[in-house]
Length: 218
Image (cartoon, rainbow, N blue to C red; front, side):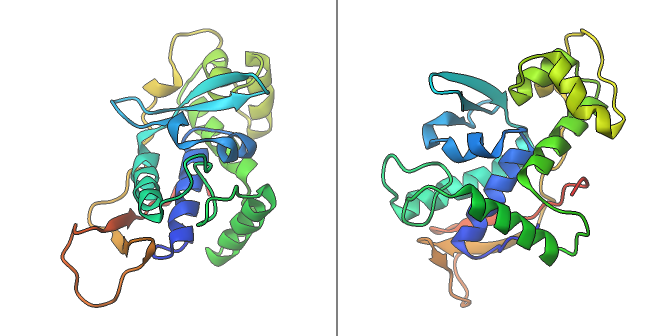
């Protein structure tokens, strides 16, 4: 991923990309999240996303996103952000604008040398494609993506040449989603929300680590 491995904004942006890719959330849903909407405890992490003004839905978050989310949560705590700041916010606690995320993803795609356009909806589609290829039923995929029906899920994957299974009990959370960071690829230590000095520092002492991963779909 081309996002900075040292700058606090890079830590945040990597966590945002990881969450959308590993849950299939819409950009608006991800940006509306509060810290309490994210549950990383236990074997099955999930996120509670707003669905309309008064309804919410729950989406599974695949374990590959956990290192990046935990890193951002640790950094958020060091930044002492306002209590009601969105989960993904500026370093002063203001909401992120969708236009910023669109420009950021396009910039990161160019920096990574990718020829096709990188955008949040493409990350959502990549998540759906992985689940469809793994044999998740249309009903389970629609539930994960927050779509009205299995028909909507099938229609979304039609351009990719995928035909979803009809019925079946396989849930999204039962699919292996192996994108965990490779051991030893720790690239940054950030202390107190600022870049750590280049001088030697004791590992683990007030530090936040960032690990690298590269999903094959982007």
